[in-house]
Image 1 (cartoon, rainbow, N blue to C red):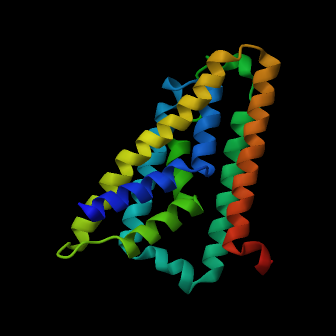
Image 2: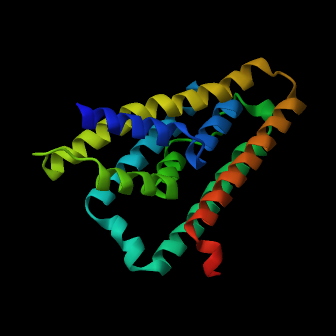
Length: 202
């Protein structure tokens, strides 16, 4: 139980803090509301599971063994996150009720190309285990806890964006908010790339 509590606390700290995924989810909530952002959320959760399976299989070690692969991944990550940020932030707020929105397929790649997701799961798999746990048991416990905590905390970010959408009716103000969220996403992605050491290698 102590290990499970520590995992839950770690998951809450990691999934609840600002990151590329949470910024995009909040922007989607502000742009489309909670209901229309659910498929984006489900896509991000599926992508997070894919990252968990990959880390459990040892694929995360490839980033250490092959630096070029790591930097290529970070470049693709930054490009995709900025594409999503642009798509949400610079769309017309007056078309919020339309069917054109970021959905499951777009969300699927968010965590797969999210350096923070890989880093948190690599840390979790290396730090959290209990005597007697098999690799499968560790995988199941980590993914279930991260799934529950992550879904809850990510939903709160969408709801925060949804609150902005509901309380702010002026179209110009909504455009300004969307652009502000785009700037925040740009800052978060830039910080992630800087922390990776990518810029130092260029």
